[in-house]
Length: 412
Image (cartoon, rainbow, N blue to C red):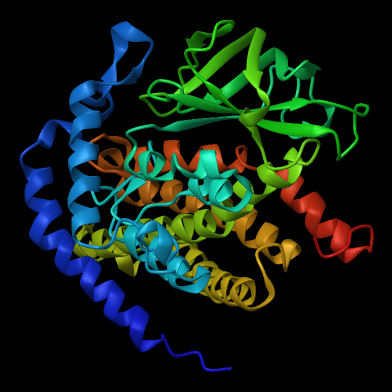
């Protein structure tokens, strides 16, 4: 195997750095309140449910617009959607690289907004949607018509096949009843990708269907937004009471919605692992740099074995994880999106745990300043802590690894 970074990926990373220096860093400098110790306060509309402020959303929109104009924003999308057919391997490099730069407008943690976009819903609709639904893709990509994602429920998270939300066919319409929790993106969405059981019993993998539901549909109501460890929030509690949608709202095949949800989650997991790896390396590097310059009792802090060994261990873990992330991404490109499921789970749960430990260690090495908001480590920790729960809790990822290890699961 050739372990060299492909020339085209090196060129891409240089292109990204040049664009950030030219377009994004000056734009960020014009709005310091969103990036210094005031960041969560400035970004959050505390009087209206804790959702993002309009001014903050407008800044993210300008970042996306500039990135799109530069040909970077849609990099991972297929050419027919204006993209460059970015591979999983290239996106693993990109996600790690952006996160390793540290938090900033180039790669906003809380809202997963980046100069190189991640488009799991757009790609899912491009793959499974009807011609009518695919006509919405440009608006989904540019966020003129954003789509939220409604899978989790008040009583069901990881056990999605035990879904309580139902949809029953009445003539040429479907009537949806139920509730969704952590319904991400509802503060701005024009549509919600809602999953509901249309046939079968609790625990059946088949019988769940995805519906593209207008957020203005009668009976769909946002009860409130959950305030989270990292703010602002876009995670809504949604009630669905007799919501009627036409047959054309079905995304993909009736009863096959779990495959649609799985495509969304798989698209994110390998890239999230790379992002967590990059953020972990950022924390490690910052702690090392500080330890070298900080003196205690007349000697550099870096000379203390108590400082060296924990960081050496984290740095070693990051190096090993990096190889597995890239090999897994390389395999996905060659064998298909759902290949190597156990490896995807490995890198996902391990990376999300690693970044939390690295952020905590960076706080400790920096002492009181590390605990302050003058440093970004608390922000990194609060954001990445969520990924040990969302899009497949770490216990579910370990369960999948164990299933492959002990022969209970196939390679899917």
